[in-house]
Image 1 (cartoon, rainbow, N blue to C red):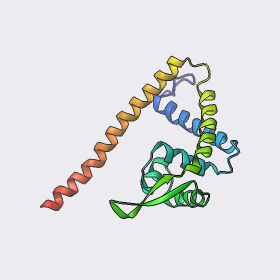
Image 2: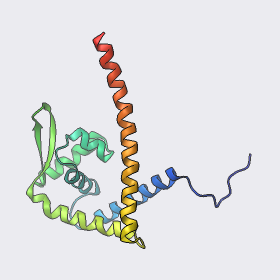
Image 3: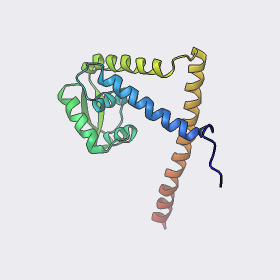
Image 4: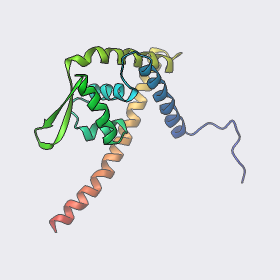
Length: 166
């Protein structure tokens, strides 16, 4: 069996995953250098809360790809700084919804500026049209994969519901 030539084009999946890894590392460096007095995890948590308002703690941990206990540490510190509050979910008293406070705005501004610098670096040499195309392509890929994941997650729930009705 012949091995592929060293100049072979990397598969799309490799490019996506490796680009995401490198971009995340660049964002983390930007957050670290922003002088906000927050850890990278705390800055990421604030950014995610801002982008996804009204999420439960468990859903926020999933969006961030961190363990729930890791997120609790971030939220404890952010709450201590007066940047977030955890409110009881009106539909489930056991769950907490994470919300930003007005005091978070200056931190979010700093996070957004740091992210913009990283984004500019990542897309250096792209035209505005190419940036828009990239966003569209990535949004479509994410939508395709999210639909596939949602369908896979729904199938076991539906099977459990059918089983329970028997």
